[in-house]
Image (cartoon, rainbow, N blue to C red; front, side, top):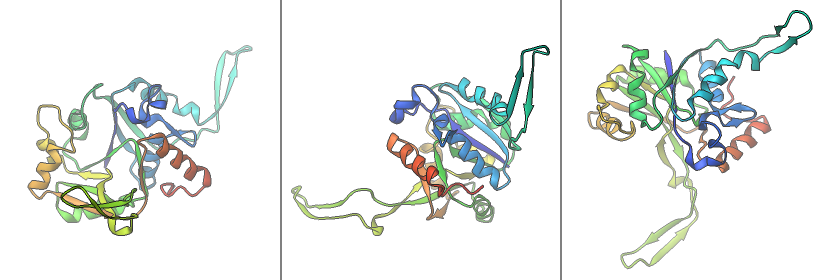
Length: 257
């Protein structure tokens, strides 16, 4: 089963680094977050990837082009033979198709543009800026049993701020700190999709999270895989620093490999 990763956005909320590289190439522990996501899927036996690029897409292509060398010891012999010798090569068993889906294309358009690489097969899709500890094999089995056209991982996210109660004249009647009861479920990506979803993507460029998912939900073809474990998007520098700290601690919840 192929894994589609959306990696074309500008990453404006983490512009401290994204002005130099695409957001999925921002590093956690000296590896792009894109690599971390791919390692998750690879752990569960999914090794064929389609990367939907846009902003600075050449950087992603160059990184994969040089990946073989990044993970090897190399001798450059300039003396007589003028050759390069690669030692101790260790690379993943990946097949990666990197597709330029357009600079300003929205998420549904990016998915539509890689339809020819999917064919008439079930596939997976996630965002190139978030990591998760979800059991992907269990997610796939859940989707197959559900009979839905699409299943998304519905992560449980706790409220970050205090909660206000406000009456009709804008008087605050109570204030309390956040609690577990305030947690809500959000779309964490890590989706399993049937080729039928392409029929829900209109010709005009839209966000996949808007018209396509809303219409799938309206037709009762969108399922939720409820997940209470770790999920963390990398939207801001604060998020990046949190992920860096977890990785450095050796206790990164998404590191299942």
